[in-house]
Length: 451
Image 1 (cartoon, one colour):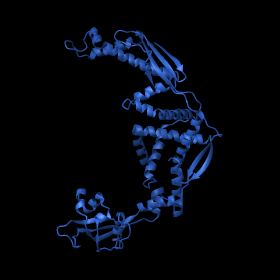
Image 2 (tube, one colour):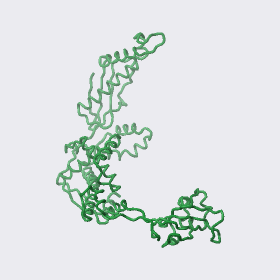
Image 3 (cartoon, rainbow, N blue to C red):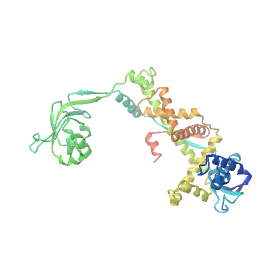
């Protein structure tokens, strides 16, 4: 067996594998013996089929299979052992490859086109100034988060007089043209109504300051601006029947329910941050502000890496790639989308490939290694962020571990966590090397940077 690599230019090469009979015959013979033992041929007992017949029946296919196995192992073994920085997969050469006949040939030459990664150097130093944006945590943000906690601790109470956003429960009855309850008309017992969600302000005003046992007259069609889904839900009818009910209805108020927010108590403090961690409203608000700021760190790092990417892409300039070969690879990976898709998306794919290569080099140069512990911790952080959306910050460690392990079972989730762990460590390493222009911006200003 002989393997050679010939550079065509800086970014492409021709890999040649020469196989002789001695390289594959032993494996072919072994495989044929296995076929003989298993072959079920009429007229012969199992394992007693003549080898000549086995070769005639399976020889060509077995030879091709074993040669392809050896070929694959040889190609990828050579690439790994010789540190060939390959892009994509080796592709059979379309010009110099001679036709292969496994039945008549004993010696084979296999030729592969290899796309090579371009050579470049990506690095940063303290001479590179990069903006780092810290999102300002305002008192309004703290107020909103505190309100979310108090609302979760709130409860519904029955009251006697309606205020905005209260919920009404009562009897709805269809009226005739004279304003009397329509004989045989539609009636809904225990109907639930929230006037605050009505589209029409005049209809909404009808319920202002209403009391239990009041009988009010309103028009559902006008109140909800003819929206079939809302009217059908209120009147307990099919959407197709809504058009039949455009007149007035009476509503007898039987119950008024109001949501009352909870108060900031030690119980809430302990639920959110653990027992005894904070003991006053001031401490709680300070802790909330700190928690929000921590959640923004990942956003700031993400923006930092985007800016570093721009910096480095400008530094290294446009790299040379084996365009024809990469388009062939892209075409094979997107056979269902055709050549037009490849042409339309090639430039963008090269841009992403360039950054991928830059990031690989940065990770290597900064000796960034990702251990299983890093991936698990990233999964825990992702789980914490999910729970935080529901105001649950003090999540027990065993629950975090369980959620993390479930995330890691899914290949796509695990790959995403590895990438996030890499980027987190890379951001930390690069922030220590460049000169940071620290800037504090509002959330609105920060979000505009991505528009």
